[in-house]
Amino acid sequence: MRPTWFGIACLVATTASFAEEPSMRFQKEISSLKKSDESLVAVVLDADVYAATQVGLADLRVQDAERASLPFFLRKSQDLVSKSVRRKTWTAANPSLKPLENGGLEITLEQGEGDAQPNGLSVVTPLHNFEQRVRVFTSADGKVWDPSGAETVIFDYSRYMDVRSDSVPFAASSRKHIRVVIDDVTSEQESELLELTRRLSGTEESERTERVTIDRRPFRIDRIEFYEETSQQSVKGDRKLNYPIAGLKVAEDQKTHQTIVTIDTRREPLTSFKLDSPSKNFSRSCVIEVQEQQGTQILWRQVGSATLSRIDFKNLQREQLTVSFPETRQVQYRLVIDNRDSPPLTVNGVIAEGNVYELVYFTAKNKSCRLAYGDPEAKAPDYDTAAIQALLTERFSPEVVTLGNEAQLSETNPVGWKLSHLLNDPRLLTMVIGILVMGLGWGLYSAVKRLDNQSPPAGPDS
Image (cartoon, rainbow, N blue to C red; front, side, top):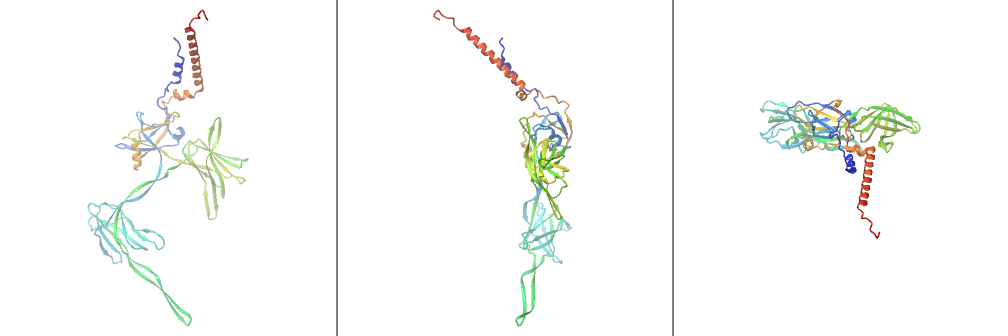
């Protein structure tokens, strides 16, 4: 039987990996929710997770008690800001008016059975340049009235600036009777015309009298409009968090006149460093550098720069001590401050700030889960997260759960042979090439030998 060298070489080169699933090195238990139905939850990653994971966080897995992986959506956490949005307005029908003895006005309104529950009203008036105090009362039977909301001042200051507010918020309720009390609806205004009287004695002025006209103007109301407001959240920006640094070293380079601050971290997704220094009245250029390997050399690559400054003299106090850079996950950074011929700055510390990442997923009632992580060879999972993303788009807020203490997985074994390991191992590649050369040589030798055996015998004319 002839040896099939080529087949043996192909078998060696295509040996499959013995590790079908990622071999995670660490785990953290995830706190569970005591709820009776399925919940949308979010867990925020911490420094332990960042220290042991890949740059792209591909080696994250959320697992249940049976170690089955749960689909999750990885997202950068955002800072949200709430604002009130009016989604419905309507005119109050059939108002009844009653002047009060103190000059105020009482307006009684009734809601219909099918009307929505307002949480505010607007006093619509054509007037400008006014200021009125408004109070709102509500009643269930139209007899006993209770105050609703705080006293509100409506105003128009267009004489000075285009500033106007005619809204009066109050608490929404099922009560159908609403009473609006406006204090002193007659306002006094100075006329824009000035009456001037002069008395002359000969050619000289002996007396001058100025008179300003005061107009008493009633507060005209066109209508009362109810409105219904709802709170709406919008994204303000990426959520930031201060991460503790793992180590700090400050050195002075006398040749280059630079202060070099070496910062050790746990590979959090950092975006800025803020210098902690008691020095005053300075302005220094500064760069942030990270290590980068090019071939056999390790170089420092710049990722950010800024001018650090502080002015502190009498009443003038101004400072800018932050250096920002694109999100980076490195073990070590270097902050280089150019002092020129000035004395070096005193550096007490550095405050590291970065982005926050969280995993969002569905979990069942009282179902315990864990976060497994820490495999440099793991590939990012491709989950169906359309439902999760749709809920997040509609501003559904997931319940926040927390991570427990880090534990090393007891079943962690060395990663088995993988195709990527074989292709990148020079010893195995040399062996495969040698086998292929030997197989090719053997094949050529066998072919030549067969040709010699099949050659016809020489004739008499040869």
